[in-house]
Image (cartoon, rainbow, N blue to C red):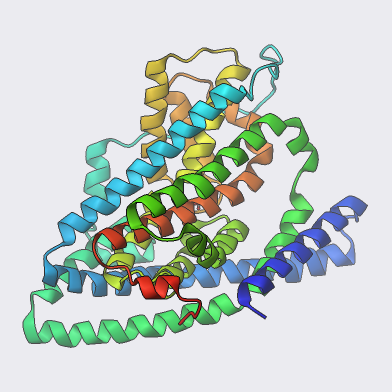
Length: 419
Ligand code: ASP
C-alpha cells in the first residue's frame, strides 16, 4: 500500500483510539495508561520525532554545502538568496494581511467579552531582538557549536561560505565536493528509512492527540478556531496554487498531491523543523527541484517561513483586540503585518512557539499580552494545522524559485513515478 495512505490510516485509527479512550475517562493510573499510552505510545511518538530531528543538522550542512558549491561556480548565490528570501517574506505578508482582513469581516472576538473578568495567567512578552543583533547572530563564531546547538541560520551561513570556497578550490574542491555528494545520497537513504516508519510514529502521535484534545474548548472558541482554519485553507489551497500557476506554470493539484507526505508529517509532529528532511526529499525527488535550489530554499524556509503561524497571529490579534474592546488603528494593523512577518522569521520551527511569539506582536500594538491565555486551549490543534501550511509554503517557494531559475525538472514534477 502507498506510504501516504498508510500514514492517513494510522492517523485516523490513532485519533479514534485516543478520542474513545478520552471519552471513557479511564483512570490515569490504570495499567493501560501507565504502560501503553504513557509508555509505549509516548515512546513511539517521541522516537519518531527525534529520529527526524536527528538528520536535520547533518542534512542542512551537507546538502547546502553541496548546493552552494555548484551555485558558487555559477555565481548566482546572491540572486537566488534574494529571490528566495523575497518570496518567503512576501507570502508571509500576504498571509497575515488576509488573516487580518478575514478576521475583521468575521469579527471572531465580538460578543465574547466578559467585561475584563478573565482570570488568566500573566505573560511576559517575548522581546523583539534588534535588527543589528539578529544580523550579527546569523554568523557563527564556532560552526561546530552552532551545529551542536541546532542554530539553523548559523549552520546555513557556514555551509554557504564553505560551499562557495569549495567551488573556488579547483582540484581539492572537486575531491571534497564528491565526498559531500556521496554523503548527501546516503542521508537521503537514511531519511527514506525513517519516513518508512512514519505510519507507526504518526499513529502514536495521533493517539496522544486524541487523548488530550479539548473538544469543549473548540466549541467555546469556535469563531476564533474556524476563522484561523478558514484562512489557513484559503492560503494553502488558493494563494499557493495561484502563485504556482501564475509564476511557475505548473499544475497545483500535482503539487499538493506530491506534498502529501510532508504535510501529514508536519500535521502530526507540529514541527516544520522536524519535517524538514521529509520536505527536502519530496521537493527534490518528487517535485523535481534542483538540489542547488532545494538545499538552500528548504532549510531556510523551515527556519524563517511560517505563513500558517502568521495567519494564526493575525486572527488572534483581532480576536484579542475585540475581546478586550480595543479598537486598533490602520497604522496599528500595518504594525501587526510587519511584526508578524518578522516574528515568523524568529519563530523556532518547533511546536507551540508561534503562540509565544504572538506576545511580541500583541505588545508591539499595546494589546494585553494576557490575551493569549484566551486562545491557548485550542492552540495544540491549530499548531498542527498551521505547521502543515508552513511546510506547504516551503515547498511552494522552492518550486517558484526553481522554476524562475530554470532549475525545475518539469518531467519529474509531472511524472507519476517517484524516484
Ligand atoms: N509549530 C510551528 C512550526 O514548527 C511553529 C508555531 O507556529 O508554533 O512550524
